Length: 265
DNA sequence: CATAGATCCTGTATGC
DNA sequence: TGCATACAGGATCTAT
Image 1: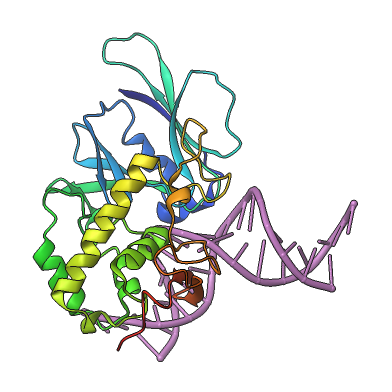
Image 2: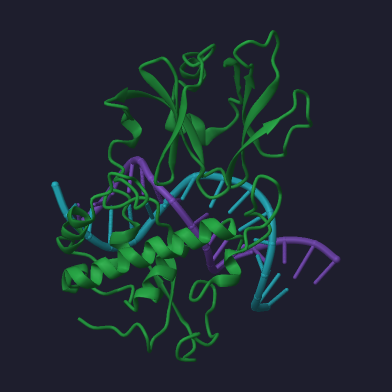
């Protein structure tokens, strides 16, 4: 049970997302957490209430359970006091820590079990209700390049820049290929690759491309050792030895093998 | 409506 | 050595 919430009001990004931040969070005070849900990179806590506590980790956000009175993390953003159902006092703290401050939290109304803030986010590929055929159809209708499309969280959620590059490499598709030029079969291959890449990344504990991106226990994820394209500019492709190329694209870096992933329009 | 670019931020790496 | 600049990332906002 959350018995007390002490949001740090000096965090402008949280205020940006929720102008009435302090007032909003009092809504959740004293509520019992019933479930923690996820869709793509969004997560939310549900209670016996018609609102949810929604959060996004951004790039560097973490939720940590700490003992009461443990030293504050340098980038502590929100502190929640937790109490078990039958306990008398506060037993621990739930803390939202975020260095890059792209993460956020907010109270959002639930409709049909989905918070308003998550309504525009498509299901992710691991969702039991993920509709493969519908997603393929959606992708073929996009008048944009394939990498932009798979990063579009309203088409399918959960894929970020690193796993987009890795999946495109695995499926042998150039990131700038027009989505409309891909056959349904090829798109299915790409979705399969996304599932493979992300499953493996989960096993390895994610990607720690520098010391800032670590797991809550302080350890690095090991998936960076399995990366085939991302961050490997000028290094040989493991399939054909052609140097991996990097292009600036959609405000991001895209890494790909010019030989295995030819441009075809 | 659909799409593309700018934008928020901070720690790290690079260049002069 | 110190300083300035570039860069990384996700999703929203704004412009077209």
